[in-house]
Image 1 (tube, rainbow, N blue to C red):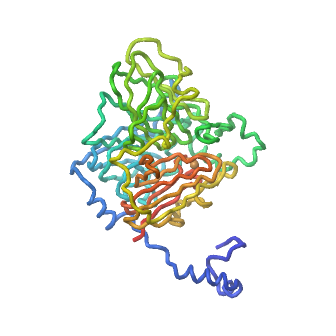
Image 2: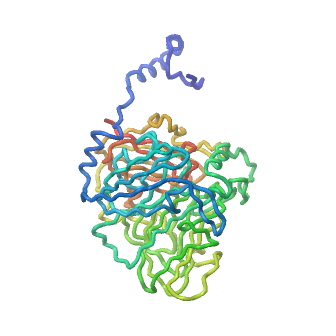
Length: 506
Ligand SMILES: [Cu+2]
């Protein structure tokens, strides 16, 4: 074992012990008296008891997913990729309290898993190998089975490597048996940045990014493509650098702007739109030309309704909006924030000429109002009750594009030793996370297994944009024992090491 010369070695040999002096002796003694905490395992007693206590309807919904090679049609040009049978994958619908039994068959040429993003489920079904399960090997299958406790718009994707940046993603809608919203129609709209099978594979992108950019000598401010990297993508909304990966396409429900997805409806009808950002490295600012949007939910949880022109979604975030449709043909735009490109679709309720894909709309223009988490307040039914914080965990987002050494608290995560730097929790605690972004770039912070509330009456969420130099204070109740990832949902940052674990002590 090697250790930095400036610090005493962790394993103190007799010789080292004698030569290091009193301070090192004290450290060594302390280390030997503090056994590694015994963590709650992902399966067994505590996890089973928590599942048993979940409100259950007794109804079982079955789903069958096959992850396999696929071809995506990009306006007539085929792209080789992987999918769950379609892009996006299926929309799985359950009611709150139902048990979802989803069999995943792996016809991919590599290991995979399925993570159920946003669901506070039992730990052994969270889909994070090797932390919560063994990976699903090629030609093997795995059955996920869990109670889906809370209503909301959620989604699923692999939690292995950069697979999420292929076509492997789908939607889970947990319906509210006592749905308070009134609407005539519902659209699920999944946004994605696309490169697989066109410019590179996600693995090739990661390999290139890992080399780092080094010192660009000021060149990083110029807007240009360099291989799979995009330089100079800038956004005031995101506090600077908007993203670093070049994507040749931005998709709405699997369709590029050149062959736009179409949504049809009736003038005057009210539509609930469930928006999901399944991208790898792109925030989307979403608007419907000629319409205002009423934000009702984020990350599945209700907020006090707010009317806005557009909504900003970081990777992994979901927003539900209500819109009352006008009469005509309208552009639905998902601006790739800071990247000077867009996803484009059409909403048709009547006759008329379809707008061009590059149409400018006031809803995305100067002075328009954008919904971000800061603007929102949790609906009273889902606020965390007032109580004292039992534990504060400081998570600092660290690293740089130059070195591509993204991490937490200066440490890069190692999936082979996932509990190495785990932050301990005890069941029953009110926990405050202070998430500080010490980097020059925004990050979408995501916590598994729990939905926190932004302090000061903010929204309940599981994925939050953290701007450069910003600190978010997030609180949650530790009521779901197990080992849970907290990570950046920029798939390349996460893979480079911007992940950590919150683990319940036995
Ligand atoms: Cu990040």
